[in-house]
Amino acid sequence: MKELQGAIITGATGAIGIALTKLLSDKKIPVLAVIRKDSSRRKYIDGIPNVKVLECDLSDFDKLEPVCSEKYDAIFNLAWEGSNQGARQDPNIQKKNVDHIKAIIDFAQRSGCTTFIGAGSQAEYGRVSGRINEDFPLNPLSEYGKAKLQVENLSRVLCKSKGIRYIWTRIFSVYGPGMGMDSLITYSISEFMKGNSPKMTKGEQLWDFMYADDAAAALYLLASNDTAEGVYCVAGGEGKSIKEYSEIIRDTVNPEIELQLGAVPYQENQVMELVGDISKLKKETGFMVSVPFDIGIKRMVEWMKSEIQ
Image (tube, rainbow, N blue to C red; front, side):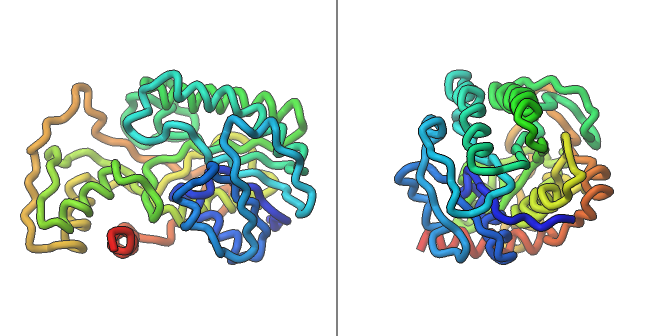
């Protein structure tokens, strides 16, 4: 394992970006946090030691001068245009990510990075079921998943041409402070806080939720292991039913509320099991989940309370 000298993080104000920025800061690793211009989310990383903030939209990476004031040997490319649910089926928005990846990798090379870690998604697999590993066939159905797969393939070619070590992470369902309010986790917490039971299906689906601190730890371990290369599933590795997850959230927030299961019908061709197989990640990095779901939810509740004060 080789310690990073410094890291560039794009998308540093998302849930994983925030957690990764804090993790590297704690390890005294200099971070260049690249965020959108005039981002209201800058508050999540402002003031963190060892962190410099650079405001830059995805479309402006080709204009950036190389950063030479620090030694940055890795880039974590977490930025994504249109990651919210409302934009995931918009092909024009998703295509922007494909258009801008070359400029991002060029900037990383000019700044001295020799390792690229990209953030892919379980959406690249499309409608599959079971315990999913890196070798599962890829058949994305959403425009978001299609764009992720395009960026995966293009960034692999670009990194190879530039002699940059290439790591692509297919990330499953991550939750944590800084995430959007359109997810099952944040929606459920919000409803329970209001004294309501969230409208949901029967909750029989097996899902794989992972706290952002653990996702950040997985990315850090991959970057620090100089033999790691290629594609890795990043997930908790253990599935629970949506009903079980919802019961844990309810018991944490408002245990008096009775769950109203079945208020929402399953989607046509509903995927009933979506769990990541992280055998490869564990074997090559020693990664272990450290934040159980009930602990992660307690942290989420505290964060959401602080957001509405």
